Image 1: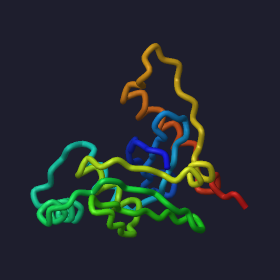
Image 2: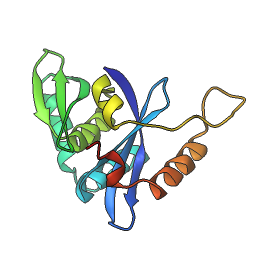
Image 3: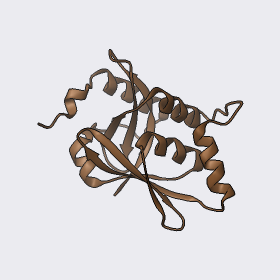
Image 4: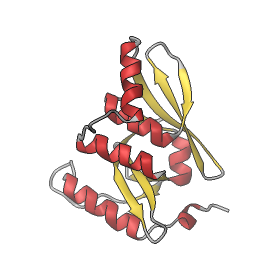
Length: 163
């Protein structure tokens, strides 16, 4: 398993399909996952620190976990089957629950939980995007977002068809 950061959410054109982009920590591979509009909004809200007037489903689930005395310790993206990603929520008592990656990521952002991806999935669906030359080891957030936009402007679902 490799830890990944959530770079952001963007709408892929011309299909208008939302994508969440994950970046391998300490590596150069990016993993785009096509997601639903509601989950895209939930992820974007969490990244921007926005609190809706009433809790969204992911906020509710985070509260339930806490009130039951548990903690989400990991989100794992564990499988890619015919273009469909599968994730697992891992709790402090080692309980694992199958979930969609989009819901899992939205929950992870709300709870400060790390997200991991299976090496095989990064090898199969990850796209290498070399880092920009920079004096600092850390790429500024604005540069990262711009690279994400450029990447999405040139990627299509067919790029992931390995057949």
